[in-house]
Image (tube, rainbow, N blue to C red; front, side, top):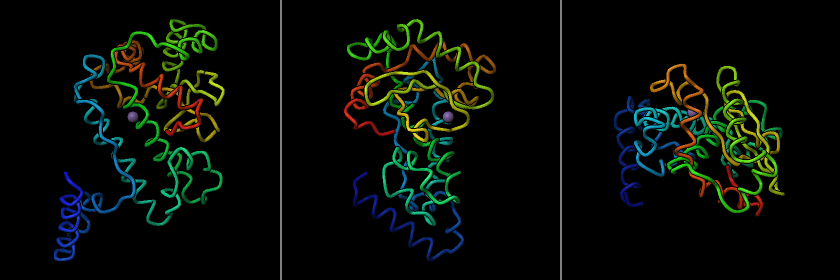
Length: 242
Ligand code: MN3
């Protein structure tokens, strides 16, 4: 859609809402007009991660779960525009400087937005092995790729309830394995995310039901190592976002 067409569509929605006040409460119109946050598109077709992650799970996970975080952030930005005044990784980093009233939204919906925006971009690959500097760092800090996968999967299984398993990276390129509950993002603790897997049930339940370990094991087959290598380089260069 061109910018002009999109603008016309938005103006059309606003005109409709003026003419028919009941439409103002329509979630679709409210979301289209609200901004400033937008749902990043999936960088591949929703079936691109089959069979590790089924198409319907991808569609619901991206189009409804991630979209809900965007809606929540846009609603919060009306009263607290500062949450949109800088990139989300900086908002998360500065959560302690944000108004008390909006910290919960930042932690849950800002963290959720950041976590999922990262998650989509590190999938859609063919698994295999990482190369270059990242491979060396995995050997140095995490005992090699096989041990990293074993420890990552075990940590993911141990998350009680909903949460994430992450590999974090510092500005010197040092890696660490960690987990977080809910949508907590390591940026709130001053750490950067290299990669992570979502172990909320919504990420795997349609296909795997209670078999979280099988989901974690199969996930490595669709990991996009070149994308993660690019994140590693960005972290060391100081340019990594969420
Ligand atoms: Mn999720």
